[in-house]
Image 1 (cartoon, rainbow, N blue to C red):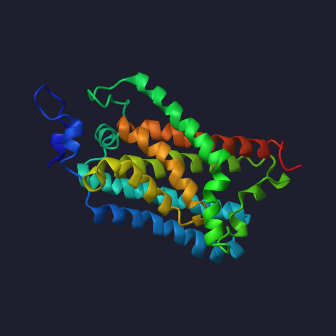
Image 2 (cartoon, rainbow, N blue to C red):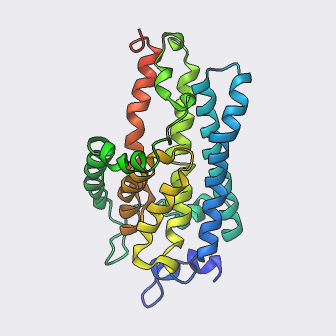
Image 3 (cartoon, one colour):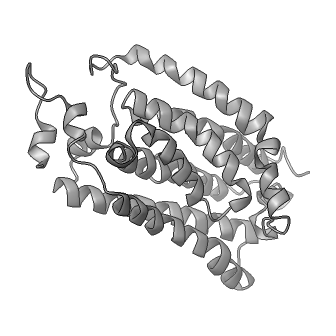
Length: 275
């Protein structure tokens, strides 16, 4: 199927975009290949590269590790662009926006855009507050029972950044903003819910959003102790994105978790934390 078909406007009696997408889906091997292409580098950066370079880095261990994780997420953006160019033959925003569902939520019955459907982000937000904050200890508990030795390395503990030495260090805010951009928009979100999710129905059917959540969880080999909670909370990203064919809904729900981090970084820079 050519890109031209996907970019044609919907007309009465013709295939709409939702129907057209079903004819051009990824195979299982393509999906797993993309997973490996981004999951394995993140694990390598966390468990091999970080311990190797931290002793020689002039930066604090936590900052060095954070930068490596940002590099891993930036790699996902590069992978996404390569995939988009191979599929679309262009990197025009108009083509990428439609292909990755960066559009107003669409009514599942009529396939027409409806901004009022953005209100459907509220249930996923409440769901994530329950499982990502209140019950996260219980959700991740099985990992501690099954793998008691599986604990984060000391350099992965970001709480060490709440130190007086970072007061007035505004460059730390730049690192935080880069982390937010590649975590919640250009990196993870762009790849998992923009590139992958629209192409998974051919293999997983109507459970594609669940399969996407599981794969996204298993991608977190760089923090395996949190796999259960990542899988459970990602359901709140993939479901509205699939249901309303709008990646903006996943971005909104996912990015809310980054707001506390931004507040903490600002408090550290202003000297309100770590005294």
